[in-house]
Length: 150
Image (cartoon, rainbow, N blue to C red; front, side, top):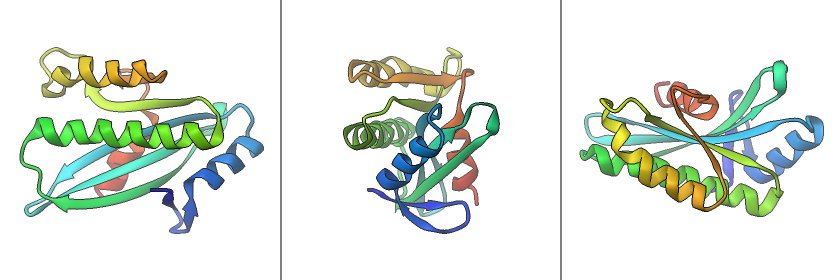
């Protein structure tokens, strides 16, 4: 799970790349997030590690995973949260740096994804992570959304 790709197509180790980003940008904020998209016969997940460099922009690396189509929305979105939390745990274990989790769920009670906020955010918070949901900061999931559609 540590093999990721840069926007230029270079394959990198996520842990080594993250350590390098911290070294080069000591004030960096690291966000992880996952988004998914259903296609006719499969579901595509994109997980992103985004490096927010203050006012200097954002860089990110990503990993794409394709699985048989997940028709149930709740299951598909739960998997997004699970993948993001696993990625945050991996990074935290190896880089010893604060990682925030962006979840592509909406606080609007009329949004379908709203029903997952309590359980997924509670799970991540219990592990010590700050979680961002819509309409708040969505650095990693915006990048994941872009990559899932390309």
